[in-house]
Amino acid sequence: MLEQLMNLVRQHAGDAIINNPAIPNEKNEEAVSDASASIMAGLKGAVANGNVDGVLDLFKGGAQSAGNSPLAQNIQSGYAQDLVHKFGLDHGKASGIAASLIPMVLQKFVHKTNDANDNSFDLQSIIGHLTGGVGLQDVAGLVDTLSVAGPFTVFAPTDQAFNKLPEGTVKLLLKPENKEALTKVITYHVLPGKINVLEIVSMIKKNGGSFKVNTMQNGQLTLIQKGKNIFITDEKGGISRITTADVMQGNGVIHIINTVLIPKN
Image (cartoon, rainbow, N blue to C red; front, side, top):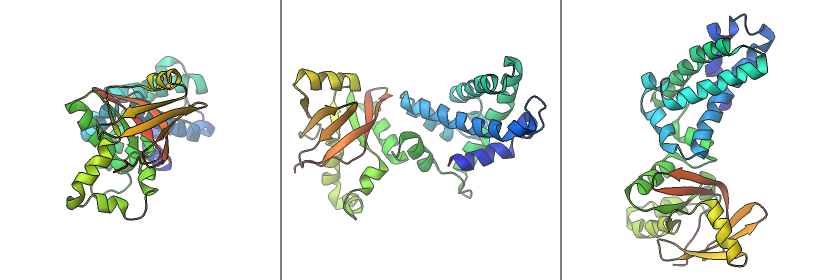
């Protein structure tokens, strides 16, 4: 996806970069690459800091508002700083380049993502890339859950985690007649209360190296720490690892994990 984004930046970099004497011709491609990297870094940073809603709002708000969003302003500022440090531009010139390029690219990015006739980008893949594989439906569903009640702590499996299940498992769970089983699996990934990763580590240490927690499904999970990693063992003996911690929400926290947790019943 980064290559596609670079192509999008390249298409609209004429006045800002290609024809700009402030950036030497031999540095044009580097400046284009840095612009696309700044956009991805800004979006990833927003997700990592718990602003999943802001990223979703950017893409759902439409192309016209995309360039003026607070998230867009943060990305623009970051790219301007990059131009100052990497290319030796003064702050005024760097800010001018960033202001003429980043909002326009974000508008085109959002437009292409929302255009049903354009398959350059799709929102689920973008969200998956930003979160390490958690799909749009997973993120949006968790955000909805956390905004209604709680607080909650959610262990959210990535798309790759679901792909590790036996073939046909997901389709089977999604059938209407298996709604109860699906609910059990989902609520097995949810804990009452908002527990960040530092609190998890503290509880593990206080309990001699492992800590059992009760889930909303009335099951149990066992948490342990090995080195810098936190591992979760389910009631079937399956082991998952927290790959991204502390994706904060208004009424809870999401920890992204690499294996689906399976309850005993």
